[in-house]
Image 1: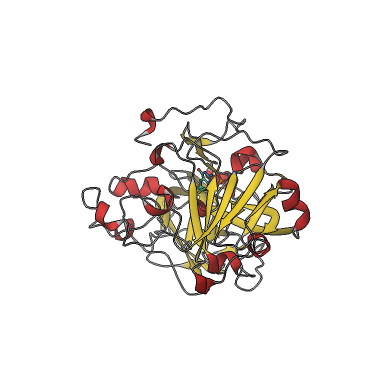
Image 2: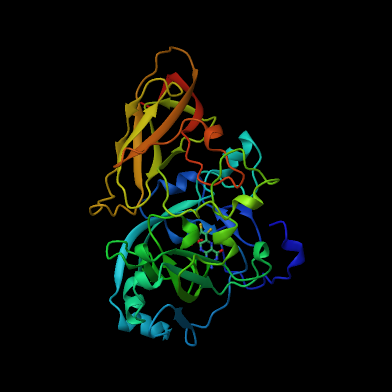
Length: 393
Ligand code: MTE
């Protein structure tokens, strides 16, 4: 946001937002729900779904809206919203979106990083309806991979991104993901069964499940099939992960030799109880676990002693796949029945998830510290006081 003062942008037409949001940045709007909201339902209600905007929300007339498809295609096309809804099969998926900056604040507490601070709730789980990007690319007769058609580049209509000199937001995914019949990349016009809300990309957005939220471009203006990744700042100069020897004084020569982030890693966090709560036993804690690339969450471990000994959390089971397409999150719970103390005691509750490739979360935030504060998926912990003398029953 450092360039913001140089760019004149107008935030007069922002949509209504839930006042309960934890607002991390006001304009452009960046907000996450209170963590306990996340575990109240498998599908996050729209009013609690996190919002990550880099510019003002554009005002788009759906009647005149046109999506452009060009680049390495034999049949460059313009499609109206009606074309999108009527020419292509309507598909619905359940998928979570997660910002690569989720849990950045915690990383910044270890050593300062640049970027909007996020707690543990810059992710949400929704249902998305629209057509397959694959069908649209085939309609435009995307050229074969051998002719250089390697990337599907998306541009939004939200001009005024301060980081990119007022340009609109852009990003890209590989054509491999875009064309994969099981990749489920959609051009979405409905969210949770309702017209896609303005904050989430009305009238049309990309939802590319299993990969970082940054690639799911909202207010979609144009798709260009290209031999190279998106030229956008957000593909080339942001959303990359470095080791801790790279900092702002030497990052410039490293941007181009590091890949842009695509698949999400494995993640979990405890949403209830909040840190520093006083718990009366028995107490059930709740959290979420997510994996990238459609992998399944196989297991969530809970420790009540700061990570020395572990037990299994109960997975709440709504995430049914299929196969390697576990795009949704998995919610979990664990009941603390007793502790080995007769007096009130501080304990450190820790969670870590494992996915179907046996990926798990690193222990220390310091091991994955990076200057942009992305992909913080270290063990999550909450310190609470357990009071065995006061029982709920
Ligand atoms: N698309 C556009 N056009 N502009 C944006 O600012 N933000 C991206 C992505 N798509 C963004 C965008 C980021 S960083 C994330 S994490 C997701 O949208 C957030 O989607 P949501 O606001 O619907 O939760």
